[in-house]
Amino acid sequence: MIGGGHITPGAVMLGVLGGLSQALGVWWFYAAMTAGPISVVSPLAAVVDASVPVCIGRALGERPGMLASAGIAVALAAVVLISWHAGDGGSRQRLTRGAIWLTIASGVALGLNFVVLDRTPPDAGLWPLLFARGAATVLVLIVAAASRNLRLPTGTPLRLALVIALLDTAANVTMLFALQLSLLSLASVLISLYPAATVVLAVAVLRERVRPRQVAGMVLAAVAVGMITAG
Image 1 (cartoon, one colour):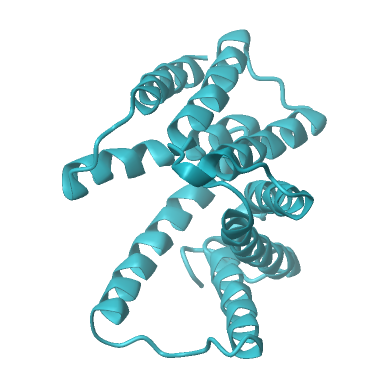
Image 2 (cartoon, one colour):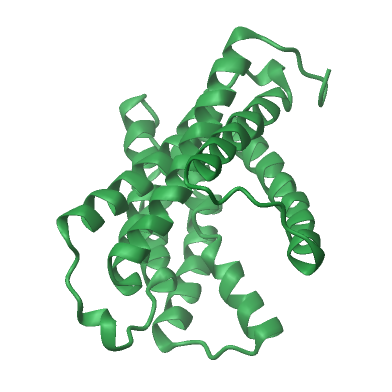
């Protein structure tokens, strides 16, 4: 057993689907950023990512209180502001049809990952995450081999990859528990506010300058968290 859970058909199927949706979402997101301006791709993908589980949660019968529902709207606005990159000379470039579809597909795939994890059996423990990681790893290896980019990192890139793997695993464990213990429409929106932490770390570690709209987004994120938790 892992985390006190049991292997069930639901844990295997939903875990694999979650891993594939997450891997495809990240792949399509980076592909969209190479095909279109980041200043448009990033916030559009973020709002689609956050909106998908909210819509599905409501379709499944979830009815958050009025304060929490208002907090969802505030959180969506915060996600857009925090994720909006400043444009350089290429920021005025318009999205091509291919970039639009990649962006939307990325947001939908990442949003469905929340939905799938939310539906995993509570008695499965952490097994769904194990199957999710396995499915995502196999997909990445296949794509990397097919595109002739399968190379083992060494030195600093390898050490950073191991640290990232540990942090990602911890994040996924807490995300699974949050989704299982709360409404999908609420937990998924709170999780989607993770870019705020990225901005804080960029300022503290990399000494990056924060743009006014990002500050506004972080303030809205704090307000949204308070509204959702209080509602």
